[in-house]
Image 1 (cartoon, one colour):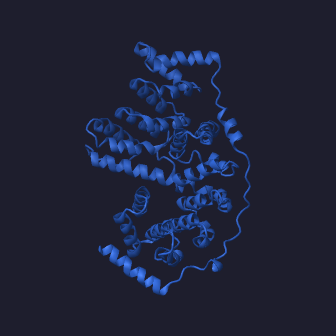
Image 2 (cartoon, helix red, strand yellow):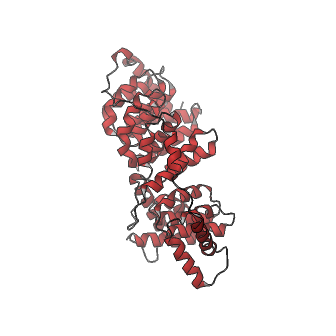
Image 3 (cartoon, helix red, strand yellow):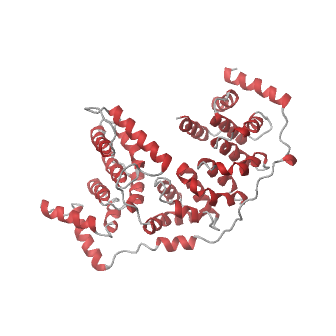
Length: 418
């Protein structure tokens, strides 16, 4: 028997002798919830997505001509090239040329399009760039997409720059970009800077982005909310279908645009369509702390039998400490998913008064394993805990629990401790 298993076994015996399962009849009462008011929302998303009509015919001709030169699809002298670049970047409908160009078969065209997006000072292009970050296979192409994103106020690509400095074929270009980013943001650098130093700065900036949802880059213009909503709506409305790729794309984009999707996501929480409010809850949970302002809109969904457990998890991930009185009673809920989600959420919210109940669930051999894993995670969020550590270690040793979930929980604990 391993040391971890021995520790857990001793604690289990002690628990069996001295603890009883919570009595469902003695369940604590939660405060009243705000009323749950749902309404059809898919038509609203479809209307929003349709508010990005193409330019008129004359503007399309002009944009096509400028794009052919700026994207270097046509040869031109340097002076003409410069004029086309400037005219395209100043055009309010430049997106009509640049977004499709990010999908071009030629990596040189995609790279040029990413550079132009970064120079455009149009933050609404973030959504298309983030999606390109998912699908771009060319290592250097990824760098230009990441750089364009940070210029538009989205630091999600800095993680890609960090990784690129660890590759022989991209280290030099990524390092050059990282130096420019550090100097622009006033970060201290050695002379000459080392890759380790630059990578540490990229990680720190990326971590700050994840915590706040806003970039530290100065001078980024605000993105018009109407343009943002139209793009996010075009993604969210695809979740009505059965194809997995559009749904995955929608989640990938909306979780990597910081605070920008929050206004539309909050509205989506009251969607009558369960798949829409489920998606909104999942995205808010993935966004984490920057989405804390959404907590009042999430609370009513605790009463929703279809999405209640998602709402519990979301409140924990976004740091909604005011929701703790609503979450504690769910540790005794008859529904396994509610108990498991509440255990994790209370740990994330650092609710130390729940530690005793979490320990009871962890050490109860009659409790569902999902709840016990959730309780172990919750206790470890609160600090070192031998029983919780032993229980998770035993799951990994025996391979009797979903390993990707265990890995995700371990990574989340590492983030908390960092």
